[in-house]
Amino acid sequence: MMTASPQQDAAFGTEQHVWQVLEGVPDPEVPVLSVVDLGLVRSVEIAGDAAVKLEVTPTYSGCPATSLITAAIELALQDAGYTVETATVLSPPWTSDWMSEEGRRKLKEYGIAPPSPCGTRGAGMTIACPQCGSEDTALVSEFGSTACKALFKCNACLEPFEYFKCI
Ligand SMILES: [Zn+2]
Image (tube, rainbow, N blue to C red):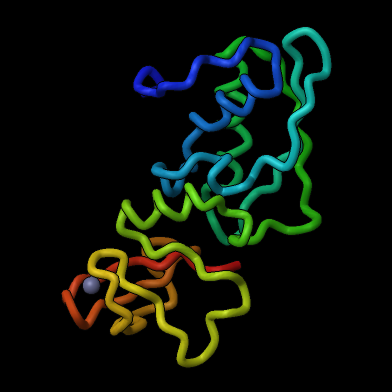
């Protein structure tokens, strides 16, 4: 999949290359998003020859896939030839505000409404339909396929869709 990228491969052993590998690690729950899109990797440090130290903040504990994320990250970097040491950083806790613009765009293309900035989804706030863009939508259930998503229905195109909850 990376072959279609116009970018040159970054050199092995550089921070840039590590980020490039991380961009290829999908979130186990929403595979269209990478762990970088979600903002899960707090820092990357080159700790020596092919040795990398990472700080990773897992997404909300309500997601069953959380523990898989660290394993997936380590596996991808090991495959790329690195030894990895991962520290889990729980403070500050992950928030959906850390999702990148690119991540939000991909999520919407995938048919899931991206999270609103935290604190803005109050009473009367509308979630736009990712299919047709209509704001005439209604909450069906606070819990979609997983606890991290809510299920909505669009009154304009009548399609149900999921909303990635703000945390
Ligand atoms: Zn719609």
